[in-house]
Amino acid sequence: MRLTDCHNFNDFRKLAKRRLPGPIFNYIDGAADDETTYARNTAAFDEVDLVPNILGGVAEVDLSTTVLGQRLDLPVYCSPTALQRLFHHEGERAVGAAAEKFGTMFGVSSLGTVSLEELRKKHSNPQVYQFYFHKDRGLNRAMMERAKEAGVEVMMLTVDSITGGNRERDKRTGFSIPFRLNARGIAEFALKPAWAINYLTHEKFALPQLDEHVDMGGGTASIGQYFTEMLDPGMTWDDVAEMVELWGGPFCLKGVMAPDDAVRAAEIGCAGIVISNHGGRQLDGSRASFDQLDEIVQAAGDRLDVILDSGVTRGTHVLKALSLGAKAVGLGRYYLFPLAAAGQPGVERALTLMRDELVRDMRLMGRTRIDQLSRENLRFR
Image 1 (cartoon, rainbow, N blue to C red):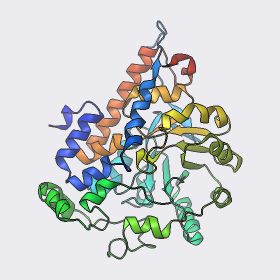
Image 2 (image 1 turned 135 degrees about the vertical axis):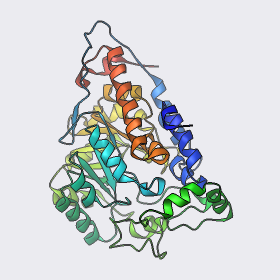
Image 3 (image 1 turned 90 degrees about the vertical axis):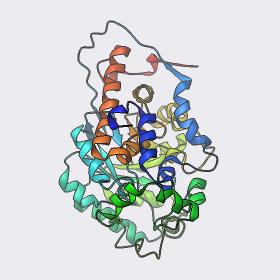
Image 4 (image 1 turned 120 degrees about the horizontal axis):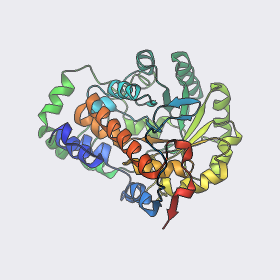
């Protein structure tokens, strides 16, 4: 199977599975507990049907949108995700370059593997910095100041990960950073020697956003320990309000699922929220993001920008979310599997397919601009 044989999300997933050692593939592909929320995230879009109009004069389609003060050529962006150079040696460099080529936004994680400064210098497209709230308040302030000095446009605080989710696939293989694989995990790595050669012949794996603060590479700490020991489950609205004020620019909360929380985010000065259940990786049994979109937009959509992620694999999913009031849609696994399969060409192919789907589907809907989409072109089953 080649990259040119990939025509949708499932094709990219299959190619990534062929190329990645089992523990790493399952880290991307897995979710919490019984993975019911993970499955529901995509299935939720099937509960709503599109109602197209005809004869709309749709020779030209404009997919641009403005979200969090950033103008994007596409209504989708590459959400911040961790450990990208573990999946492919290009990691965030590939994602940032591909996002710039398509005129859209990309995110850099606190657990990212390329420094936010390097990416900000290389790319002119909007960049989000996603970070977690630490017990060490000084560390939180230092991380925000670093992002500000680097020229990052948007600060995104993840609020649904004050502790790690129960990801049982990782437990079965012993997957962790640094690696502490069990016999089954080691055996699965042995089946994919090409990945190991690629990993060992490129620059040493690192977490540059955290290297000054946490010793991951030396084996004294792990990703699991980072979540359980350094993050603060006592975080409150007052803590976040202080951070919003300190940042002084577009500030977004990622992981909002309840309408009253969206309203509260607007009240403390957030520019936007991301409706997200972390791709089903945190609270299994949580509602799907799309299931919550309508009521959150109704409650707070005129007071801040509402973004959606989790479960998006098709252009029609994006159009349904935009029709219910989302200003943009975040992609996660949708670009991670292509990254793992082929690096930057993989991400570019995935974004090409998404852009082509969006143009085609907008034409079939009889719409020429994103702001022409509304609840009127949807029907709930």
